[in-house]
Length: 121
Image (cartoon, rainbow, N blue to C red):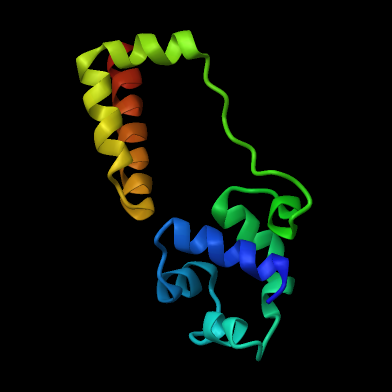
C-alpha cells in the first residue's frame, strides 16, 4: 500500500467515515475503496484533488510531502474562552461529535449567525 492510499485511509478512518459514505460523497463506484485496499485499483490517484478538498487538506499532505496544517490558537485566548462555562460546555460537546454531526452543527451555527445578523440590521 502506497503512502497516498495510507494517508487517504487514515483521514477517512480517523473521521469515522464509512467506505459507503465516502464513496457516495465523492461520487465513486460502490466497490472503489475495497478495490483500493485490495490493490485491484489505484483510481484514488485520479481523484486526489477531490479527496483532498473533501478532507480539507492539501494534496501535498495526502502525498506525504508536508505536515498536516494544524490551526494555531493563542493560549491566552483559548484559556479565556474556556473560562466561560457556556463556551466550555459547547466545546466539550463538539469534541464528542462524529465528523458528520460536526458538519451538521457547523451548518446550524451558520444558520443561527445568519439569523442573528439579519435581526441586528
